[in-house]
Amino acid sequence: MSIMDEIIASRRARIAAEGHAFGHAVPSERESPIVPFARARAAGQGALICEIKRRSPSKGAIEAGLDAVAQAGRYAEAGVMTVSVLTEEERFGGSLEDLIAVKRAYPHLAVLRKDFLVDAEDVELSYRAGADAILLIAGALPTEQLAALSQRAGALGMSCLVEVHSKAEAERVASVRPAFTGINARDLATFAVDPIAPIATKPFVTWPTHLIYESGVSAKEHAALARASGFDGILVGESVVRDPRLIPELFEGLSVPRAGFWERLYARRAGSAGRRKRPLVKICGLCRTEDAHLADELGADILGFIFAPSKRQADPQLVRALGRTAALKVGVVVLERGATALPAAVRALLEAGALDAVQLHGDEAPEDCFGIAFPYYTALQLRDSRDAERVGAYASPRVLVDAFSREARGGTGARVEREVALAAARVKPLWLAGGIGPDSVREIVAELHPELLDASSRLEAEVGRKDPSKLRAYFREIAACEE
Image 1 (cartoon, rainbow, N blue to C red):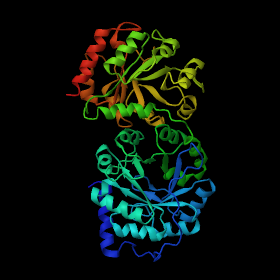
Image 2: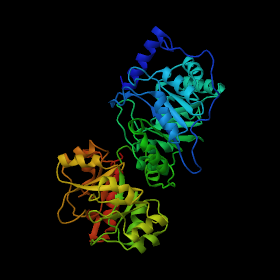
Image 3: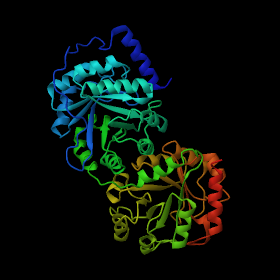
Image 4: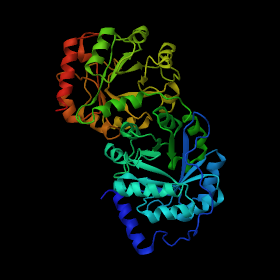
């Protein structure tokens, strides 16, 4: 059984033994009017939903003695308009009493009851306890029951936040068409968090809805990632329980404009969802218009242009002149240690939309990257398996792993050692560069299952000029990985 299955089985057993209220005194009638759910504080800003929780199966104790009413007050004082109260008792340390007390103390707040709700009595009880909205987890409910509970909540005036985790769940929920859809970065089977999971699932949400990004948010950068990727709000738990002073930074992150790098990249991956073995493809070191157009035509997902001292250094005008491409365009930069800003020419390309993102090369302190460029991701040269732990220090959703070299930052043709790549893949899904070409790509995909492959020098006729026959052969080998 998954962790979620265990929680639901335990909850059903308690309901059978104790009733839905688990012995708590719930008002016989609702005491306060419904408040609209997930409102944004300002125009152009996403909604911030802050959660009250004492512990979790993945983190253990977060704040065991947490006073729910006092915590709600801290959120309200910081400008939060929607509060999630986790009422599950055995694993999360909450209760219906928390929900009732918070709503009585702050009737102007919209309050979400977050729990593993299973039937109509749960919905009725939530309404009487003061919930303005309830969480319904698609993976925990058959479609017919999900629809029935959603309809009953709507009849009572409550909103439903219907949570999905996958393409299959999104397709099931499409018939319910909830007004609020949460996509969780946490896998409820293992409780592991992947910040890309909501973005990768988003293309399968095909009905008009307000999208809420759930879990894994602990910094302004994470809020910005969600907002820039088209989410209408975020639900944040552990990080604001531990430190409500984070809330102003989250509001700032929710004010960023849409920047579709991650959204577009994983929409491309969703379009080839049936081809499970095919990695995303980045062709880097592009210096000529014809090479970039050929890579785009052949199906590259990312075109990489180096803006650093290199034999493959690109002219910024090349990128400006390319015009629209199906592939996303990334500028590769190598900053001096301690630098906190991009070169002016690269920043101008990013701000003009000629580049979709920037690839930073690892001398930057993890805490400085978001301030240097957004969207961005980090590339690291790893020496050994222990060095792979550095991948987890960076907040970028993915980190590109390359072979270590004292002579050059990439483009050496050297392959990352197998054990190093596998160690990095245990930290984050593997983005891999180094020694990848037509003769090696099938072996690499079969052995390491990378999510993205970054190829450059092994596709050249000479430094800075791609070989069309090698490019075509490379994409034929990539296509063979789909079979």
